[in-house]
Length: 316
Image (cartoon, rainbow, N blue to C red):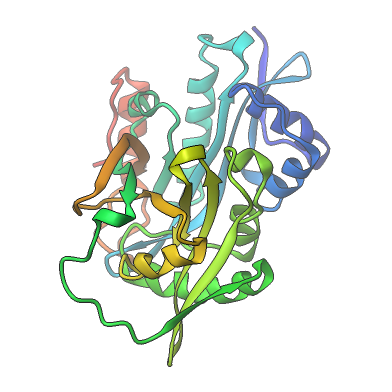
């Protein structure tokens, strides 16, 4: 098997995207390709070519992540896929080795990803960093454990206004919590493109913002999904403040929205966990704060262990 691994050119983007999506049983539409291209970094792409055809893919996005003491650059690993016809031939290992070499050479101390199959990445040195839970919230059986002071108001906004109001709120949250990832304007356009494939039978995205006398403090993007005799379901896509405003936010969907489906942790009554998954995996070099050294010794240690036959390499 004669395989060439290299970054792709802009002219090869369509073939790259089709190869990556085919591994997940999806054929991307033209509008999807344009949205994906907004955040695509050609210089960080990797494709495995066999006889001029892309048979496996990997990519990375340059992301700032909050850590104690500041921020660090992180390689946001994405588009990792192998065509069904070329699996179990070592292509994934080849791509991961090349990609992590590139990450080390770029001086990045972190690489992270959301895994479709979490067990895959442990052998490359990734470790579990967070869990994701999906919860179904019955509005008629939930209440806050402590009184909530309500000083502002919520209003619906159109998408263009949301894209101007939401980022500053998000950035304030990112600054406070380690593990939070910053977004560029391109990422906002990508994440809220409202593609048909993301709707899962629900309607289009609606946007609302919570404002106090100091300005915007929270936001929500949601969909409404009709479910026959059960009424409708409001599905939260994201919010940028806290859990303190959902009782008000449910009113945005009308009284028929009796159930919210949400992602994240909760301990309230009337909240039914629907699923739990291992999601974000992280590999790192040695650091204790944003002022830590970037010598890359941790990368060298784990790469030597990996290449020496240890199937579960780790940074120091």
